[in-house]
Length: 178
Image 1: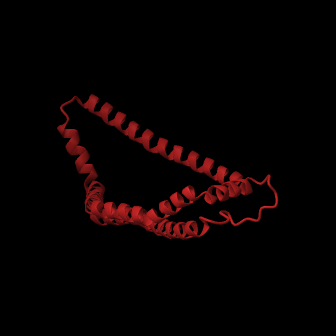
Image 2 (image 1 turned 180 degrees about the horizontal axis):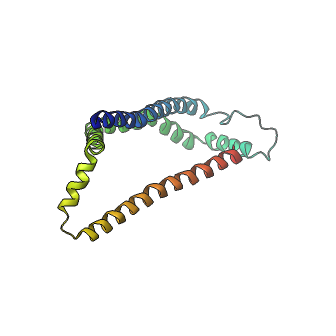
Image 3 (image 1 turned 90 degrees about the vertical axis):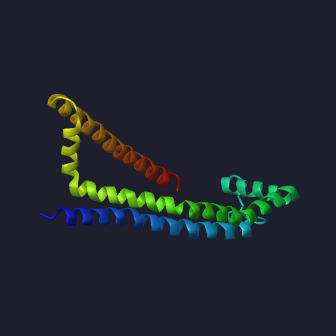
């Protein structure tokens, strides 16, 4: 029975469980942001949605014609162009703030995984240590532990249930709205 190896494997699994989706998300956000900037610059003075408007009842055509009418006005067109040209500067500002905060984030994540590893490895010892430290009668200690376990159980499973319902509702909305 090797608690250290099991705790290390579970901790590595948790690290991978968080870092792989994070890397995929960051890559996707970067690609989408760069595509957004390029296409917005291209479409600032033309057909916004790249659709042929023959039917005035189409909402996309209405929005497109409204944006085209707005972009015909020099003041609005200049504001849009200046806003779009400021996007890279805003992104660089946000990126520099992130880089400044990165050491603190890395330290926090390291502490998180360090504590996770040792709770997995020596969790029972910690439980009995806290049990012995509590200055209550055994019945009250048991009641307190049971109540704490129930609250944690309700919180975790309640959050999972809410996330599941939100996911189902979002999927239905995406299917209905396209």
